[in-house]
Image (tube, rainbow, N blue to C red; front, side, top):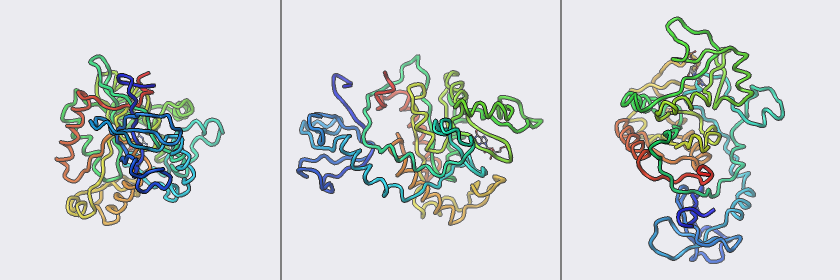
Amino acid sequence: TPSKEGKMFIKALFDYDPNEDKAIPCKEAGLSFKKGDILQIMSQDDATWWQAKHEGDANPRAGLIPSKHFQERRLALRRPEVLVQPLKVSNRKSSGFRRSFRLSRKDKKTNKSMYECKKSDQYDTADVPTYEEVTPYRRQMNENYRLVVLVGPVGVGLNELKRKLLISDTQHYGVTVPHTTRPRRSQESDGVEYVFISKHLFETDVQNNKFIEYGEYKNNYYGTSIDSVRSVLAKNKVCLLDVQPHTVKHLRTLEFKPYVIFIKPPSIERLRETRKNAKIISSRDDQGAAKPFTEEDFQEMIKSAQIMESQYGHLFDKTIVNDDLTMAFNELKTTFDKLETDTHWVPVSWLH
Ligand code: 5GP
């Protein structure tokens, strides 16, 4: 399906260097690109080697890139390598949970225990990321705002950034109200801190795929429903959501048009300098109490960021390094402003 005056564009979901490709018929004819680059397809006549150029490149000369089919096939063959590293990430939202869960159609079909823990997120690598056909998109005045998903490792400062954004314009930004099965505390109101529901209803809702994510904490369920995102968007607000990266692919629909921002830690040296006196809510701490960062926390943060990037990097629309909080916040703010005014590349499937 060609877009924009019959032109076809794809987003590269992997890095490519023809000089390191043993299969390419002629290295000089190859086009190198990075994950996230937008390429214009000039020819798909050959089943193995497409001709493409970088979007907006005035030079009319096209280069060779592996076709989707060819790349998928050889990536799939190499899959065992990709899978050596198990994903061990948790974000602060789920901190304190003994296990983390995810919804998948498979759970339903096999009718396995509904709360069975998924061993890792390795399966997500099974859909080998190659290219995605994209098209330019700009939000129209009467349209809802896009859902903005923030992902990042524990302790990177995602919640601080989210809070700063919220208080910078409470009319414009909104967050979801989670559901819980625990009893309401006296100072809480239904629909404000949480939506309080019965265990039975929660379980039914899980079966009916009503949750984006959910978990168990001290014998109660907690979760974020899809409808809670809808209700923020329906108020004509930008909905800010922080979830684990594996949930992102379930949210990538025409309805939400999620814009995914990865909050990345700076170098370990900068972490030591900037987080010296800061505190972390450790994922190992069931009480969720804040403790000073340890060297281990820093290493864990860097490692988990690397894993997130390598497994889910192709889903990130933007990466912001949270070195200095104020600077990261300003960059985030600029990103949001641009999101509302500029043209962005989105999957073609969203616009049909
Ligand atoms: P509390 O019962 O003290 O309000 O919260 C207990 C725990 O539930 C906290 O660690 C909090 O982070 C977690 N929690 C709150 N909302 C959600 C949610 O929507 N999803 C998940 N997975 N955990 C949540």
